[in-house]
Image (tube, rainbow, N blue to C red; front, side):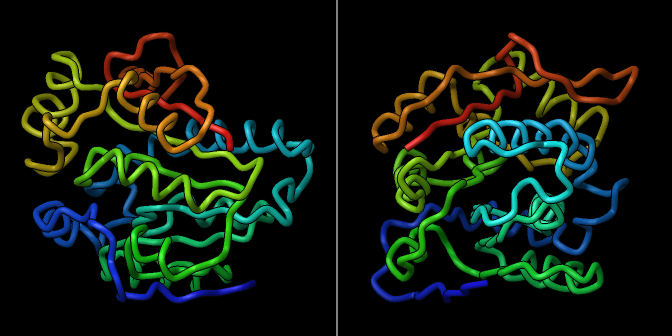
Length: 254
């Protein structure tokens, strides 16, 4: 697997929010605890992983029933955290690079992947520095539950798009800026049910579908319509829906 370093030289306008980094730093050691602060992502992982696999197989003409249907595809996971998506995608044959601005996340991800016997290229750095330092392009870029935690969101999307090869695909999932999202994702998840630590999300950073579609177009990408994601509290499972009021996901091709 080809590896590259994220150079700190000549940085672009950074998307990293120091307050967000401090919040995630306090949780970094708990990424692989299914009942810890990242429990919502563990619950969501099955649905979003299937969405990624299905779309990759469709775009690159792969059989999803194969043991390693993603063999040879190069995937970049921006804001990879502890590697919750990097590991299953690697098992399916992809060459995965995970990048995170928080060094403790990368340390956690590296330690866990070694325990699992997986070869994953984890890099501590930012998308801005990666754009400047690497000439590697990727078949797919993952931007999953990240954009609501960064500054300079439109530029962040452009830089993510710059890492795509021609014919590549970007996956974006985030939270809509609506009263319903505020009620469920902040009041409900953080203050009432306490699924997440207080302050995990900032309402002002939630992104509307119109905004993300515009930013994807500004990045010279072709976005598809957004698809809603909803949690069934009784079954404790995620599914896809037409309702975009809270969580949603979209893809865009280059």
